Length: 296
Image 1 (cartoon, rainbow, N blue to C red):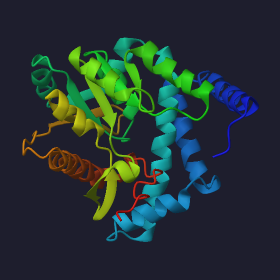
Image 2: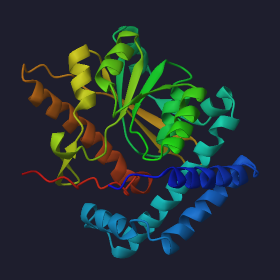
Image 3: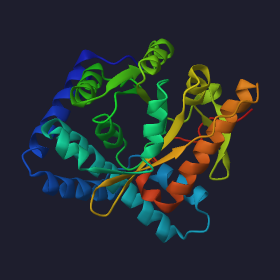
Image 4: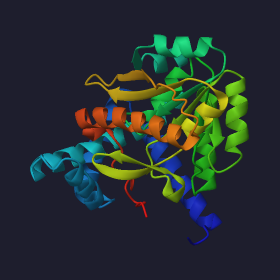
Protein backbone atom coordinates (compact mmCIF):
# COMPACT_ATOMS: atom_id res chain seq x y z
CA UNK A 1 0.00 0.00 0.00
CA UNK A 2 1.36 3.43 -0.99
CA UNK A 3 2.34 5.74 1.85
CA UNK A 4 -0.16 8.49 2.47
CA UNK A 5 0.95 12.11 2.07
CA UNK A 6 0.20 14.98 4.46
CA UNK A 7 -1.79 16.62 1.67
CA UNK A 8 -4.07 13.58 1.35
CA UNK A 9 -4.62 13.46 5.10
CA UNK A 10 -5.42 17.16 5.40
CA UNK A 11 -7.64 17.18 2.29
CA UNK A 12 -9.74 14.30 3.62
CA UNK A 13 -9.83 15.78 7.10
CA UNK A 14 -10.96 19.22 5.92
CA UNK A 15 -13.59 17.67 3.63
CA UNK A 16 -14.94 15.58 6.50
CA UNK A 17 -15.00 18.53 8.90
CA UNK A 18 -16.91 20.56 6.28
CA UNK A 19 -19.52 17.81 5.87
CA UNK A 20 -19.89 17.56 9.65
CA UNK A 21 -20.38 21.34 9.94
CA UNK A 22 -23.20 21.44 7.37
CA UNK A 23 -24.96 18.34 8.69
CA UNK A 24 -25.05 19.79 12.21
CA UNK A 25 -26.88 22.84 10.86
CA UNK A 26 -30.00 20.65 10.64
CA UNK A 27 -32.08 19.41 13.59
CA UNK A 28 -31.08 15.86 14.53
CA UNK A 29 -34.23 14.06 13.32
CA UNK A 30 -34.21 15.91 9.99
CA UNK A 31 -30.48 15.28 9.53
CA UNK A 32 -31.08 11.55 10.05
CA UNK A 33 -33.69 11.57 7.27
CA UNK A 34 -31.26 13.44 5.01
CA UNK A 35 -28.62 10.82 5.82
CA UNK A 36 -30.95 7.98 4.89
CA UNK A 37 -31.76 9.70 1.58
CA UNK A 38 -28.05 10.13 0.86
CA UNK A 39 -27.56 6.43 1.57
CA UNK A 40 -30.23 5.44 -0.93
CA UNK A 41 -28.87 7.82 -3.59
CA UNK A 42 -25.35 6.47 -2.93
CA UNK A 43 -26.54 2.94 -3.58
CA UNK A 44 -27.69 3.89 -7.08
CA UNK A 45 -24.95 6.39 -8.00
CA UNK A 46 -21.79 5.69 -5.96
CA UNK A 47 -20.50 2.24 -6.83
CA UNK A 48 -18.79 1.61 -3.48
CA UNK A 49 -18.68 -2.20 -3.21
CA UNK A 50 -22.26 -2.46 -4.46
CA UNK A 51 -21.53 -5.55 -6.51
CA UNK A 52 -19.69 -7.06 -3.54
CA UNK A 53 -22.64 -6.40 -1.19
CA UNK A 54 -25.11 -7.91 -3.66
CA UNK A 55 -22.86 -10.93 -4.23
CA UNK A 56 -22.44 -11.58 -0.48
CA UNK A 57 -26.19 -11.26 0.09
CA UNK A 58 -26.94 -13.57 -2.84
CA UNK A 59 -24.63 -16.26 -1.46
CA UNK A 60 -25.95 -15.84 2.10
CA UNK A 61 -29.65 -15.84 1.15
CA UNK A 62 -30.00 -18.22 -1.82
CA UNK A 63 -33.72 -18.53 -1.09
CA UNK A 64 -34.33 -14.82 -1.82
CA UNK A 65 -35.04 -13.34 -5.24
CA UNK A 66 -32.70 -10.79 -6.80
CA UNK A 67 -35.34 -8.13 -6.22
CA UNK A 68 -35.34 -8.91 -2.49
CA UNK A 69 -31.53 -8.97 -2.42
CA UNK A 70 -31.30 -5.53 -4.03
CA UNK A 71 -33.81 -4.08 -1.58
CA UNK A 72 -31.71 -5.38 1.33
CA UNK A 73 -28.54 -4.01 -0.29
CA UNK A 74 -30.14 -0.57 -0.75
CA UNK A 75 -31.31 -0.54 2.87
CA UNK A 76 -27.80 -1.53 3.98
CA UNK A 77 -26.53 1.74 2.46
CA UNK A 78 -29.43 3.57 4.08
CA UNK A 79 -28.64 2.17 7.54
CA UNK A 80 -24.94 2.94 7.24
CA UNK A 81 -25.56 6.54 6.16
CA UNK A 82 -27.95 7.01 9.09
CA UNK A 83 -25.33 5.57 11.44
CA UNK A 84 -22.74 8.07 10.20
CA UNK A 85 -25.12 11.00 10.77
CA UNK A 86 -25.93 9.78 14.28
CA UNK A 87 -22.22 9.53 15.11
CA UNK A 88 -21.71 13.09 13.87
CA UNK A 89 -24.29 14.32 16.38
CA UNK A 90 -22.93 12.42 19.41
CA UNK A 91 -20.62 15.26 20.56
CA UNK A 92 -23.62 17.64 20.65
CA UNK A 93 -25.72 15.34 22.87
CA UNK A 94 -25.90 15.11 26.63
CA UNK A 95 -25.40 11.81 28.46
CA UNK A 96 -29.14 11.57 29.09
CA UNK A 97 -30.00 12.14 25.43
CA UNK A 98 -27.59 9.39 24.40
CA UNK A 99 -28.90 6.92 26.99
CA UNK A 100 -32.46 7.52 25.78
CA UNK A 101 -31.46 6.18 22.36
CA UNK A 102 -30.81 2.72 23.84
CA UNK A 103 -32.92 0.02 25.49
CA UNK A 104 -31.61 -3.37 26.66
CA UNK A 105 -32.87 -6.91 27.14
CA UNK A 106 -31.40 -9.36 29.67
CA UNK A 107 -29.50 -6.52 31.32
CA UNK A 108 -29.19 -8.63 34.47
CA UNK A 109 -26.56 -10.71 32.63
CA UNK A 110 -24.23 -7.71 32.56
CA UNK A 111 -24.99 -6.84 36.19
CA UNK A 112 -24.14 -10.40 37.27
CA UNK A 113 -20.93 -10.45 35.21
CA UNK A 114 -19.80 -7.06 36.52
CA UNK A 115 -20.45 -8.07 40.13
CA UNK A 116 -17.81 -10.83 39.86
CA UNK A 117 -15.11 -8.16 39.72
CA UNK A 118 -12.94 -9.84 37.06
CA UNK A 119 -13.92 -7.62 34.15
CA UNK A 120 -16.26 -8.55 31.31
CA UNK A 121 -15.73 -9.16 27.60
CA UNK A 122 -18.38 -7.83 25.20
CA UNK A 123 -18.45 -9.55 21.82
CA UNK A 124 -20.27 -7.14 19.53
CA UNK A 125 -20.53 -6.59 15.76
CA UNK A 126 -20.98 -3.96 13.08
CA UNK A 127 -24.75 -4.12 13.48
CA UNK A 128 -27.33 -1.35 13.78
CA UNK A 129 -25.32 1.57 15.16
CA UNK A 130 -22.45 -0.20 16.88
CA UNK A 131 -20.86 3.05 18.08
CA UNK A 132 -24.08 4.02 19.88
CA UNK A 133 -24.28 0.61 21.55
CA UNK A 134 -20.85 1.13 23.12
CA UNK A 135 -21.26 4.83 23.82
CA UNK A 136 -24.63 4.60 25.57
CA UNK A 137 -23.63 1.63 27.69
CA UNK A 138 -20.38 3.30 28.75
CA UNK A 139 -22.58 5.80 30.62
CA UNK A 140 -23.48 2.95 32.98
CA UNK A 141 -20.25 0.92 33.31
CA UNK A 142 -16.57 1.76 32.74
CA UNK A 143 -15.75 0.53 29.25
CA UNK A 144 -12.86 0.21 26.83
CA UNK A 145 -13.29 -0.66 23.16
CA UNK A 146 -10.66 -2.34 21.00
CA UNK A 147 -10.48 -0.39 17.73
CA UNK A 148 -8.49 -0.49 14.50
CA UNK A 149 -6.47 2.57 13.54
CA UNK A 150 -7.60 4.56 10.51
CA UNK A 151 -5.15 5.08 7.66
CA UNK A 152 -5.64 8.87 7.95
CA UNK A 153 -4.02 9.89 11.24
CA UNK A 154 -6.03 13.13 11.47
CA UNK A 155 -9.35 11.34 10.97
CA UNK A 156 -8.23 8.63 13.39
CA UNK A 157 -7.50 11.22 16.09
CA UNK A 158 -10.83 12.97 15.48
CA UNK A 159 -12.77 9.70 15.80
CA UNK A 160 -10.84 8.77 18.93
CA UNK A 161 -11.68 12.15 20.48
CA UNK A 162 -15.38 11.65 19.75
CA UNK A 163 -15.28 8.29 21.54
CA UNK A 164 -13.13 9.20 24.54
CA UNK A 165 -14.71 12.62 25.16
CA UNK A 166 -18.14 10.99 25.29
CA UNK A 167 -17.50 8.18 27.72
CA UNK A 168 -15.32 5.21 26.84
CA UNK A 169 -11.63 4.54 26.38
CA UNK A 170 -10.10 3.03 23.27
CA UNK A 171 -7.44 0.35 22.93
CA UNK A 172 -5.60 0.23 19.63
CA UNK A 173 -5.80 -3.17 17.99
CA UNK A 174 -2.53 -2.32 16.26
CA UNK A 175 -0.66 -1.38 19.43
CA UNK A 176 -0.10 -2.97 22.83
CA UNK A 177 -3.59 -4.50 22.90
CA UNK A 178 -2.74 -7.51 25.05
CA UNK A 179 -1.28 -5.53 27.94
CA UNK A 180 -3.93 -2.81 27.79
CA UNK A 181 -6.85 -5.25 27.61
CA UNK A 182 -5.59 -7.23 30.59
CA UNK A 183 -5.12 -4.01 32.60
CA UNK A 184 -8.68 -2.91 31.78
CA UNK A 185 -10.10 -6.27 32.86
CA UNK A 186 -8.14 -6.08 36.14
CA UNK A 187 -9.83 -2.69 36.72
CA UNK A 188 -13.15 -4.55 36.31
CA UNK A 189 -13.97 -2.72 33.08
CA UNK A 190 -16.06 -3.99 30.20
CA UNK A 191 -13.83 -4.50 27.16
CA UNK A 192 -15.74 -4.58 23.87
CA UNK A 193 -14.59 -6.30 20.69
CA UNK A 194 -16.15 -5.98 17.24
CA UNK A 195 -15.52 -9.63 16.43
CA UNK A 196 -17.24 -9.95 13.05
CA UNK A 197 -14.48 -8.93 10.62
CA UNK A 198 -12.14 -11.12 8.63
CA UNK A 199 -9.15 -12.01 10.83
CA UNK A 200 -6.78 -13.17 8.12
CA UNK A 201 -4.64 -16.32 8.41
CA UNK A 202 -4.36 -15.85 12.20
CA UNK A 203 -8.09 -16.30 12.77
CA UNK A 204 -10.06 -19.42 13.60
CA UNK A 205 -12.31 -20.70 10.81
CA UNK A 206 -15.97 -20.90 11.83
CA UNK A 207 -19.11 -21.49 9.71
CA UNK A 208 -21.11 -18.32 9.04
CA UNK A 209 -24.03 -18.43 6.60
CA UNK A 210 -22.84 -21.87 5.54
CA UNK A 211 -19.30 -20.76 4.60
CA UNK A 212 -16.13 -20.89 6.68
CA UNK A 213 -14.91 -17.46 7.72
CA UNK A 214 -11.75 -16.40 9.54
CA UNK A 215 -12.84 -15.09 12.95
CA UNK A 216 -10.73 -13.10 15.45
CA UNK A 217 -9.46 -15.09 18.42
CA UNK A 218 -8.89 -12.08 20.67
CA UNK A 219 -12.13 -11.83 22.66
CA UNK A 220 -12.20 -15.55 23.46
CA UNK A 221 -8.48 -15.65 24.24
CA UNK A 222 -8.66 -12.76 26.72
CA UNK A 223 -11.70 -14.22 28.46
CA UNK A 224 -9.93 -17.55 28.92
CA UNK A 225 -6.76 -15.85 30.18
CA UNK A 226 -8.58 -13.53 32.59
CA UNK A 227 -11.21 -16.12 33.56
CA UNK A 228 -13.87 -13.46 33.06
CA UNK A 229 -17.42 -13.67 31.65
CA UNK A 230 -18.26 -13.07 27.99
CA UNK A 231 -21.47 -11.32 26.95
CA UNK A 232 -22.63 -11.04 23.34
CA UNK A 233 -23.99 -7.49 22.92
CA UNK A 234 -25.80 -6.87 19.63
CA UNK A 235 -27.77 -3.69 18.97
CA UNK A 236 -30.75 -3.72 16.60
CA UNK A 237 -32.26 -0.50 15.30
CA UNK A 238 -36.02 -0.28 15.90
CA UNK A 239 -38.52 1.49 13.64
CA UNK A 240 -38.55 4.50 15.99
CA UNK A 241 -34.75 4.79 15.73
CA UNK A 242 -34.06 3.45 19.22
CA UNK A 243 -31.32 0.82 19.48
CA UNK A 244 -32.42 -2.35 21.26
CA UNK A 245 -29.43 -4.30 22.61
CA UNK A 246 -29.78 -8.03 23.10
CA UNK A 247 -27.41 -9.50 25.70
CA UNK A 248 -26.54 -13.20 25.61
CA UNK A 249 -24.14 -14.90 28.01
CA UNK A 250 -21.54 -17.16 26.39
CA UNK A 251 -20.90 -20.46 28.21
CA UNK A 252 -17.16 -20.64 28.98
CA UNK A 253 -15.74 -24.05 28.02
CA UNK A 254 -12.92 -25.65 29.97
CA UNK A 255 -11.72 -28.57 27.89
CA UNK A 256 -8.06 -28.05 28.66
CA UNK A 257 -7.43 -27.31 24.96
CA UNK A 258 -7.37 -23.52 24.53
CA UNK A 259 -7.62 -23.71 20.72
CA UNK A 260 -10.70 -25.90 20.97
CA UNK A 261 -12.23 -23.57 23.59
CA UNK A 262 -11.60 -20.51 21.41
CA UNK A 263 -13.32 -22.27 18.51
CA UNK A 264 -16.28 -23.20 20.74
CA UNK A 265 -16.73 -19.62 21.95
CA UNK A 266 -16.54 -18.14 18.45
CA UNK A 267 -18.94 -20.75 17.08
CA UNK A 268 -21.49 -19.75 19.73
CA UNK A 269 -20.94 -16.05 18.93
CA UNK A 270 -21.30 -16.41 15.15
CA UNK A 271 -24.40 -18.57 15.52
CA UNK A 272 -26.05 -15.82 17.57
CA UNK A 273 -24.90 -13.13 15.14
CA UNK A 274 -26.18 -15.09 12.14
CA UNK A 275 -29.57 -15.57 13.78
CA UNK A 276 -29.95 -11.81 14.20
CA UNK A 277 -28.54 -10.90 10.78
CA UNK A 278 -31.03 -13.29 9.18
CA UNK A 279 -33.81 -11.31 10.88
CA UNK A 280 -32.32 -7.87 10.16
CA UNK A 281 -29.98 -8.32 7.17
CA UNK A 282 -30.01 -4.64 6.22
CA UNK A 283 -28.49 -3.69 9.59
CA UNK A 284 -25.23 -5.63 9.20
CA UNK A 285 -22.15 -4.15 7.53
CA UNK A 286 -22.05 -6.22 4.32
CA UNK A 287 -19.32 -3.94 2.96
CA UNK A 288 -16.77 -6.05 4.88
CA UNK A 289 -14.89 -8.70 2.95
CA UNK A 290 -15.99 -11.20 5.55
CA UNK A 291 -15.07 -14.31 3.54
CA UNK A 292 -11.83 -12.89 2.10
CA UNK A 293 -9.47 -15.34 3.85
CA UNK A 294 -9.97 -18.94 2.84
CA UNK A 295 -8.81 -22.04 4.72
CA UNK A 296 -5.81 -23.82 3.27
